[in-house]
View 1 (cartoon, rainbow, N blue to C red):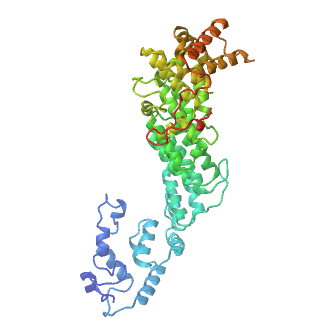
View 2 (tube, helix red, strand yellow; view 1 turned 45 degrees about the horizontal axis):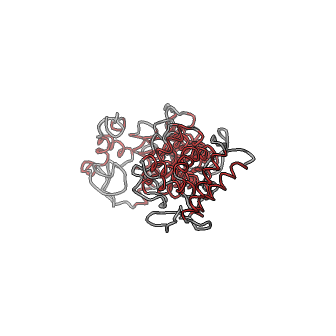
Length: 502
């Protein structure tokens, strides 16, 4: 029940009951005793004198200063509070210095049972009392917010970006959106109509993207929350920008992981990995270029090995790039692994990612260049020609020949000099295969490979090889040793030759 009314009760300050300050002993003095610098500063200063005296004046105005003690029901209290408010004798009218204070006091102490949709009526009632008070833009925004006038609130927030920056407006509208108070239909504004939440998500994301890289990554989180078409396009552009501005493999890998989470890797993955490969190629980072080219193959639905092969062919056209490629693909220890093991383990650190490795293994061109680099390394190590010449012949004759410029180098610098010195290096089958390959080059209508060695000298060298093989006892038709010995996909992770493609 309520405490006894009268001076004794007011002095005692005791009693229980709803939130009326004159009826909750000590409640009002505690609120009004806030220091000027605390809790918003101005709310801590009461210009009308001592809080207890103010409470006494309010009680006296309501006729509570004298009279016998009695108990009042909650319904009586509500009727009394409503009557006091309508007469302008409530505590909000007594202590409120601004309209917002009057609204807060009235709702907290006089009309605590008001529902949310009734706040607008309370605001209008308070506004009628305070006709002489100056109202600024902040007051109008607060009025619109408390009145749940979301369209007006949105217009005012958008019109004053100096006071209401995008970070504030975006998060406020997001709260209203999840509270079911914001329209989800497209509204005119800007270049394309879109829901207000999406429009502000887009605007704030663009502001974030103008900052450093961590803020650019945050822009993705805001854009992924929207659903409008302009927001989706901006999300793709931001991801492309993050990939283009990646200064290291770690940043690029993080961007690719982000694409995967956003389900954009199928659309953007191959494109951005190709761009990264080309950038590294321009920086003469051949190993990095091949690695990202392999990842481009992995994320592509249509390349299936041809991109890496075309990349290698274009590198072979430039002599400096070709030498750099051979240096990257050559082993430090040519004897560590036999030539029939492919892919060699020494390439694992170069290509790093298992996704890149699996994609690179499918390229026949890469197989050709790797094996050629290993054979060159054996020759430069001073190993016997019989250890690598048969492998070079089978690279040409088994359908894995590289571009014309490399075939010319292989024949003129590697095979023909070695076979001229030692005609017995090849089996009869290999000698016949090499003869057929050279004959095919001569019959090529495009003339892509034009040897600098006279044709008669080439025919004599190859004929001597075949004669030596027959004299040695290697009959025609005998199977040549396998150049490529496929292993089960396991520790070595080898792919069978038929799984490769150009």
